[in-house]
Image (cartoon, rainbow, N blue to C red):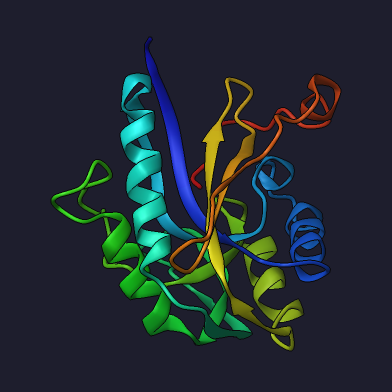
Amino acid sequence: MGTVTLGVSLAVPEPHGSFLQRRREGFGDPAARGIPTHITLLPPTEVDAAALPDIERHLAEVAAGSRPFALRLAGTGTFRPLSPVVFVKVVEGARGCTVLQERVRSASGPCARELQFPYHPHVTVAHGIDEAAMDRARTELADFSAAWTVDGFALYEKGDDEVWRLEREYPFGAGSASVTVPRQAAEAAELSRPPAASY
């Protein structure tokens, strides 16, 4: 059955998600249109396609045992020079994100993996572009803020065209059923074919 590349994340809700995605594109980040605005819980991870049912069951169990929490974004930061990333900061809800990603990556589960860097919840708004554009992203979004209640997370899959597509949503709480999302139409995928980029 081959392999697939998956990611698990918290979606940044509208209108904030589209706004930040457009700004990321405007800063010259070629990956912007292929990556929905998000906070990562599981970074890009290649798995056997045959493992998908176990992964989906595990994620459903994590969601069932989780409760909603408040999350707020405000201001910008950067991982430079360690990593060429500018991001919007998570100023409330970081602990909730951290606990959730630990449960998703549980050593006893099918998504177990080590991270390249210590976990730091954030929303990427520029990655791997020239320094002047990175500086502009950090300055122009310094006053950005948004707040919402996190009530679930989602599973994404990266296509051969490097576009990340929503596959399934997992609402929090026992008794909540995960929702399979219909695949995007082929013409929608054609809107963007960015080069390979980090999730």
